Length: 248
Image 1 (tube, rainbow, N blue to C red):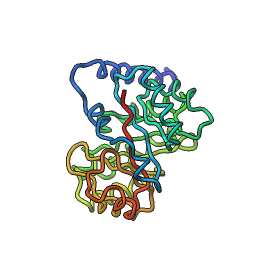
Image 2: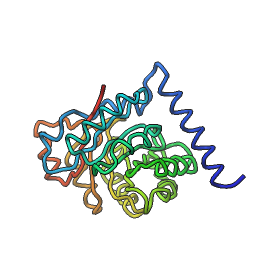
Image 3: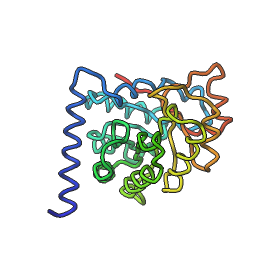
Image 4: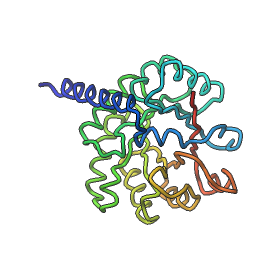
């Protein structure tokens, strides 16, 4: 079997699995994560880029169309949508300057490297201009840094030269020194940016942003900013991206 044919077959199997998860009555990790970005970020974080998030696996075309309209009206940097809506979203956002973004390797980046590569390749082919790749947190927490780097680097190859590549890191699972190492690893592989998530525990804080920014990579927060100081401390620490939930 030719490599391209094998990649396409695996991508189809991955998409079928994701669709199946989306129709389930229970909420998987990535659906829970989609609910955490807050709304109306643009009004409070004027000096940064905003990524719109419409990642509910149960979304319908009408939901995506509404999200596209919002992204254009608010001049968001990117719109993050489920993979099976990439081509449609691309047609809606063509020429607007809003990146079509999707996350591959859900949940938690623990699917195989080849499966993630296939997903990324398929998403880029469908028109995605920003690919968000979850770092395999099991490798990181078990300090298998070489395995984590190999997995991330080989997945990112599918996007290089064709789309922006961001890493998604569950920062709440890592000590700050390990967070710095993980962000540096992503930067060395060629990632343009990194999004720090706290879906698995902890809460967003400026010190994590400052530590991540020391690697010279663009840093963002995926999810809500629960801070009395609002966005200002994060911006001062070097945070460039925030997420804004777009829900039906």
